Image 1 (cartoon, rainbow, N blue to C red):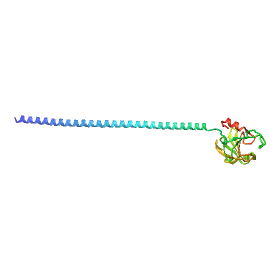
Image 2: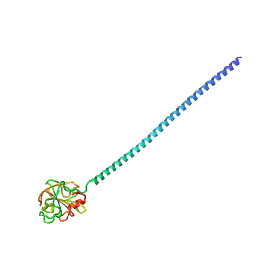
Image 3: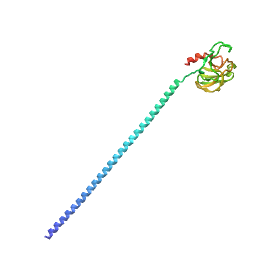
Image 4: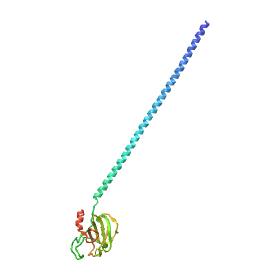
Length: 232
């Protein structure tokens, strides 16, 4: 009797021990499972964050490239517009202009007269003394000063400008010379004031177009200017 009780008690104890071990094992398994799940969640979250960052980096790179492309396009458009504006301005700017404004044509080219020994070598523009005199075309001043700038006292104060291609313009009877030899002038730039110096019967500008810088090489200045589009 005593032996059975002891045996039964021993079995009960063993069963309890096994139950405890199983419970403990189950707890460890649950804990391990939870840990694995937590680690998986962390890895997934980390991977998602990395993907977002990578996508953001790609988008930023694309945006930067687009910005650079847009900037280049804007610069190219601005340069093209500036070039077109410059070309239009150049096209609109007159190549040749009248030597004075608000004038009356008086003695003409090759006209006979008592004020000169030979036929008139230029075109006279009747204007008051002190009227602005302009370079009819851009060029380099090759003569300037009194005594006809070297062409003789009959011209008074005078200027000769070299325009290239064998063309020169002369301005005479000036009251004031505002340029010097060697100076580069632009079309329409003021170069002198008209006057009545030299062999002159009244205030006017004597204007010539020459094939050399010297007296004796003049051509019809009115015909020349009209061929250049100037309405003389």
